[in-house]
Length: 529
Image (cartoon, rainbow, N blue to C red; front, side, top):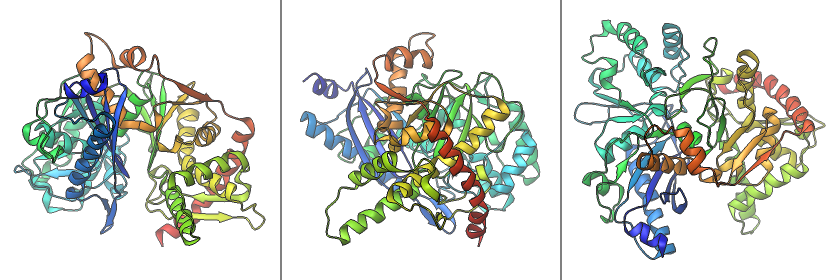
């Protein structure tokens, strides 16, 4: 009855995250307890060589996820949602969404998955003396300029998916600093776009004669805890097709999945680190000192409060695993068996963990659905190879797929630890890959040769982390940092499990990774053919 009253009095908090394969909604109370969830499954499309989501599908997905949440509330508490106290929007970081002065979309949404901005990223990285990854918004914009795309002259507003949804619900063109750091480099001293780089970019394109300067079209930058707007009547109608939801909820600054991952794992203080594993996988280590030099394998972004973070972002993680699970589900159907897909994941992961050889027994998987900038590949082709005498068992096959999900992450983190001496005592991990107890967590610990901790809320991921950021807007005390808030008010009573690396597992993964690196030569040949 108490929970029902919280919902009916409009005191609940909503977090929505647009992931690559699922839009998830989480409803919490002010103490961050999860009251209800909603999901909407979707998938990106490769259209004319560009990974994208149509705008109508984005809105349909948001409404579907929220409707699923409302249905969960009605089933659990026999009530509906008429108002909310706070809302936060998160989405896959980076990408490109340009609009003109009338709000017309000027180009298809270009997601983080695209590796089409190699020339632009190279020029900007040299110009700024700062690594600009291919998926960043500024790289997409400059590539469009280099390619002579006609729409660029008409841009009035450039944003990300999270920034677009936030704008549609609030009317505000702003975003959290962590999300903004995936659009354009941030100066940690000001928690705003780096003014020297802003001036450098404007000078770089001065001869084009555009009516805008770069800062004119970028969203305003806000820090965690700042009010970023309120839900408008139009926004409420857009989110809730039933018309029940009322305007007025306070909004947190929108964030990318990197920022919400940090919040969901309590990894926002200097020296802390976290890993988010889903369609892509990335590690984040909050820096104590600046890196000695730029590294093309390492991004420098920020926490939702603006602290610098070393990020190793890998485009490919779970997509190939998902494809194989679908194949096994199809096989079960052909055999006349009724099998729950979730059970297939659990059985395969558990078998790989318990029975797979530490080095995968001569079985090797490369999981590149798309290009992988960390290893320098523009295109991707999933591959499975094995030696003639390999122990080609289901356990070894599945273990090789899980290893493959972490191989490129290990590649990037080795650069960070060996060349920059950046390490953490433990990595916090979250994402659907860790739903099966122990399996992926232990393999990740072995891959990184570092303890890995998975919180109880790990499978709820960024949507819950975004709800926490929304609660922070309401509950923040004067001078209270996000790190202190998470430590004292969110995670003090949270359960978690830590697994240490197994020496034999570490040795086995190193053997696997050596073969993986060699096989990338064949991957490049096949992917580019």
